[in-house]
Length: 436
Image (cartoon, rainbow, N blue to C red; front, side):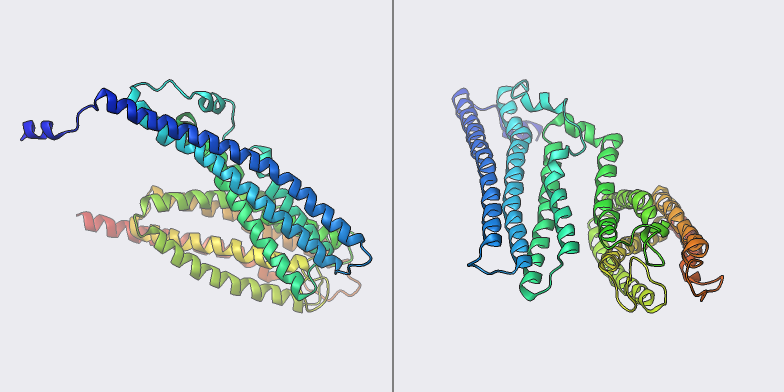
């Protein structure tokens, strides 16, 4: 049988066939390089389109014969710029994807034919000069576009059906551009085997993930919230409202420092959960995420509604009975962040119940320990409220326990920690009995 097996194994290709196959590989390489040349030319050709959109927008704005709503015109211009920017991001992804294919697929095929690896060394040379984190220019375009949308939403929010439609179209393209640029960045990090080896080490991956998740958390949370509060003059202690943003440490400190760390830890927990949970892990995650987002949306909506019904004004509700722009943004961010935390809790409970107090459980426990520091900020909120915000009101219509509900997050943390430990202990006993 061994003789038959050896005889059936494919042997080396004849010289003429090997040369023909190598010629096909080289032809494919040249075709890909030509394609990249055209893609780079297309990228540069997109910039005149930006100038054309801005020029047409300025001409229509100044025209006396063509009457068009100014807010609608600006939203149309921003939407047009995002169409161009998405084409730029698509082109960047195509360029990186071609190089990634050449480095990982085509190089291996040519190496098998030649029996050597020392060729096409430019990308490997560049890999020694690149950082694993994002270069400033790689995410500058989506970041700048997000700031433009936020400023426009504050200074000239949509006020008609067409403006809502165009602004919604623009937001969708902004999200798509973020996703495309992040995908391109991941491809760039994996151009060469050297970068793959570095990124597979815990330090390299941790550095990249840490800054990426922190940047997204700040860009979606505290940054736009601060810009909106600044433009509505509800950010500093000198503002007219009772609770400006600066008077809420859980927002300006928690969202800036603690939440990025918490989200990074949750991201690592989810990565390990997917790796160790088998083929059904993603299905469990999707089900948990759906339930968590539904629950978090209900809780966040109720709490924000309750804030609008009390007699104290803040950056979230600058007028009685209604949310401000910052309030609506805070509501959306709170629902998303709370949904992420609830999803983690569901999966952590599942892990504790399945494997007990193992390494997987301890990873979840480290995440929950970070949330403890965020919970403690509710004490700071309570202190600032009673020592600064409420005493400066003309009518002293409050008691020492006013806004006590915000302190419930501390016992919530403690109760969940005790509960998870009890679940893990039960899971450990069940696991030991199954082994015996």
